[in-house]
Amino acid sequence: MKFLENVVDMKKGHEDLNHDRITVGMATCGISAGADHVFERLKGAELQTMLENVGCAGMCYAEPIVTVKQGDVFSIYGHVTEDKVDMLIQAIRERRVCSELLLGHSLEEIEYYKKQKRLLMSNCGKINPLSVEQYVSAGGYAGLVNALKKKPEEVIADVLKSGLRGRGGAGFPTGKKWQLVAQQQGKRMLVCNGDEGDPGAFMNRVTMESDPFRLIEGMTIAAYAIGSQDGVIYTRAEYPLAVETLLKAIKIAEEKNLLGKNILGIQGFNFTIKMKMGAGAFVCGEETALINSTMGLRGQPRFKPPYPAQRGIDDNPTNINNVSTLSLVSVIMSMGADEFAKIGTEKSKGTAMICLAGKVKRTGVVEVPVGISIRELVFDVGGGVVEGTEFKAVQIGGPAGGCVSEQYLDTKLDYESLQAIGAIMGSGGMIVLNNEACMVDVARYFMSFTAGESCGKCTPCREGTTRMLEILDKITKGLGTKEDLEKLKLLAGFIKENSLCGLGQAAPNPVLSTLQQFGDEYTVHIEKKECPSHACKNLLRYTILDNCIGCGNCKRHCPVNAISGKPKEKHVIDQEKCVRCGACYEACAFDAIERK
Image (cartoon, helix red, strand yellow):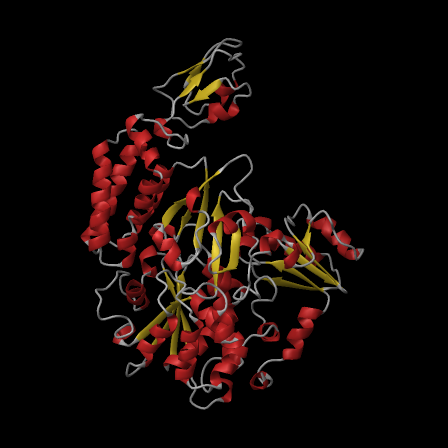
């Protein structure tokens, strides 16, 4: 680390992390829960203790999160909303623990973290994202220093030895990808794909907002290995805080000679990073569509070959990795390829960032060893489904992934195991579904997303997904036939085999996986014209029963005046007017309304 001594004040960073200190998680998830207001209240309290904003610790379910270090006591507080911050301020003044808000005195004490292994997220929620001193004090840039002691080809060999596979979906070996670009002649481009668009997935955003220097360091190592001087971080304009944080971090890195010309004083080692914002098209997560968008062209996939490693941005050889992949490179070069390879499974090494969303008690972003079971993730880390409901399924891999039923809960979270049951790792999105979810409607939702996000370039995806969506709409409205199921399967096979890009080829996966594992729900929708989960509005019927006392509460809550009746007499629902919103069902305090 001596290379860095003249670049950053390591002592300052070390002191910041060890002195008395109050932090507030101010990533997007924290701010959306009111952390910015909490920060201002703490600032106005003049507590005579260093107050800093940090990134997301992953516990989105417990936001806003505040940590307090006073002497030897470190406390992590959750749900510190604006109306509760005064009790915390009083506790800080009295130098005591605020037990009402306490989550634990370390991450290890908190159930959410007990099965996690935080390598990539080790700084998240701990350091000021824009303090390069704190980043270095926490071990940052050790990976780059180690890499610079080796030849570029030796760095690539280390990445190969580590077993790192791309965390963007396909799981292609990262070292092999680098080799392909390094072998090319001429100008080489390095692109970070930060355009995550899966519903319920925001792992990349957490890294970009909470630990930007880790990504910058990983990109710098990759640039050294493949011989690139030009880097691009591509993300969506819908991530304003991530964009703002990265732009500031890039500027700081340039000022500290960690980017630019002759990095760390090494003659000829030049690398710059520019930001490129896209409009938020899902298809731009596909490599060739991303390349087009980066060049200012319409974000549509290209025919392959040539592959990006041969002809990418401006026809230059281009290496594309996503945020997690490049950030893990800094981890590998710091801890060593052999140590990293000890984590995970035989074919899938290291850790993975997973976004737990949906009907799970502890939502948020976690980092776990690859190979952990789905059951452990949902029930041990996530705490299981919300109270009063039962687990039904988990959607893994986003719109290109698949739904996994209870019988597969013990499946390992790795590329091969998930593929075998009709799902994929994807970028790490995981949506937990309970028994209130209709799997036909879930399939319809994901097909609606895919059809809407299709770039329209190829007919199989553009027309095929639309036709599949129309059929699913029919089924959820009680108009489906047995022949529709055969049409779904036929269309799905055609789209998978003939779409231009990987996104189109994977579009039918949610439908195929639900047909395979929840086929009985499709049958009930078609044959009985019923939705077992009471989720498809068009198949619901609300009826007032004989035990109605005529209180009129249902009538007052009906938005379309579909309920009539005299006080203290049984009321009636006009089925022609009823929009099946369920307001009457929720309002009735006497269980006098039946939902079928």
